[in-house]
Structure formats: structure tokens, C-alpha cells
Amino acid sequence: MPLEQSNTKTRAKSGVRPPKKFTVFIHNDDFTTMGFVVLVLTTVFHKKEEDAMALMLQVHHSDKAAVGTYSYDVAATKIALATDMARSEGFPLRLTMAEA
Image (cartoon, rainbow, N blue to C red; front, top):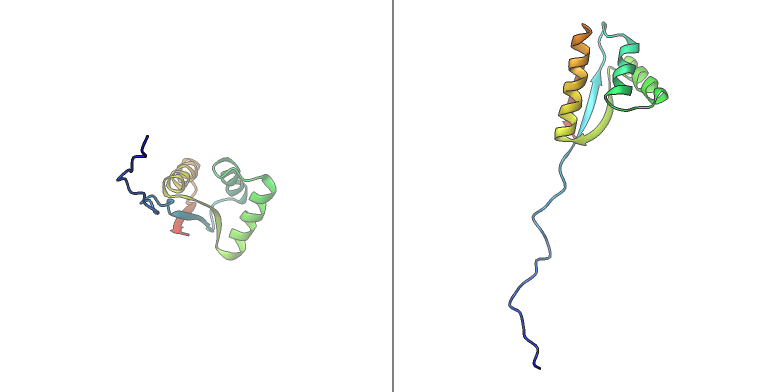
């Protein structure tokens, strides 16, 4: 039985790329309490209590700190959740994101 040849070609590269990553930053202000910042970091960003305390102190001393790196949709959702949480308590907490 003779072998048949195929005319299909294989591509070495696919057009699929991993999604861009975005770093979320939390900013210092004079009104949001340290305890509330720790609460946001533990509930929204799932940080351990010790890590949340260290991040809160970093924000307090250097005006902002990176909280985590996520895909765009996850970063935007976490920022919206944290902002809504802060506004419902009357705090002006500000979070931003930048491409990693």
C-alpha cells in the first residue's frame, strides 16, 4: 500500500499571545484609616494579615504601593470593588493600574 502525502502545512507560531498584565497601585491619603486599608487588602486582594500590614505601612510612608499584578479585567474589577467599598464607608481611597 503506497503512502499518501498531505498538502497541509504546519505553522511554527500561532497568533495567540498571553494577555498583558497590569499592576494595581494603592495610594496614600490623609483620610482613609490604616485599618480600612488593611481590610481592603485582605478582602479584595486576598492578602495575608501580615502582608496587608506591611503594604499599608509602605503606602503610608511612600505615598503608594503595588498591590498585585493581574490581567486587565481582573485588575479593573478589583479596583472597582475596592473603590465601591471605600465610598460606601466615606473614604476617598484611590487605586490605579499601569501596564506591567
